[in-house]
Image (tube, rainbow, N blue to C red):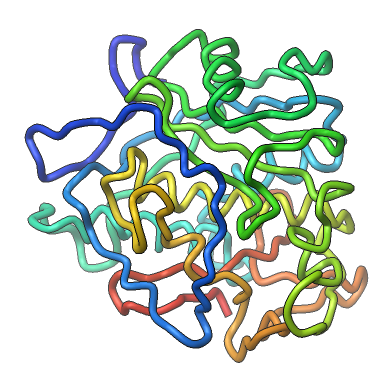
Length: 320
């Protein structure tokens, strides 16, 4: 873990840039449809994250055991390359696309022929708040900054990930996005992940729950047999991708700065080749559990990960 005097490592062309005041995206959804248009994600001159990401997992409320273990195993899988005998595809292959944005910064130093430098993801701290200290309705302006400051002691080396319990509502979620990311005190990126177990499962539980909107397509069995846990992994994956590529609202995004469309959010509804509205695309089905997945991870766990916008091909990239 980096020393407390160092900030979260970032990669940027600019020698100087103005960090924004606390301006969360307010959870605005997007009308953008990846099946009919391109997001036009471009670079806006600011930093992207690199090096080691030290995460602080904040379990806010009475979070379920399966949800905790599933999310922790997903994070551990990001840098787990496996070996030649490992089942493919691996979660780490998805993470390599996120890492590739380091090389997409104009003027970035040349890298080897295989891929960009690794971004190591480390869980440096975990906090469980079962007292709901800031209530059960979290607003991005009033409570999230206080929560981040409280549970990280203002350490800019930590990236807090607030994972909420089933009875917690987060302002702006359920309306086009199921997780959000922002920056506190001009220097500390954060992520908040909503829980769709009872809070808008029709908006944030698909493809493991019938969608409220759009075509009524197939509903898949979650790979870890827990709708909320597996849907939260999808939401966290999107937010991680968007945080790495656009940590302070001046990196890679499409749309407006107040409501950016990042690489993680740009390919919503796509999990495999052949996807179309209401159909997630080609995925594997576990012959024993019936769970749908497209990635193998830590300790034999399986995950369904979303497509991500690949800056190298200007298209949505999937594991399958």
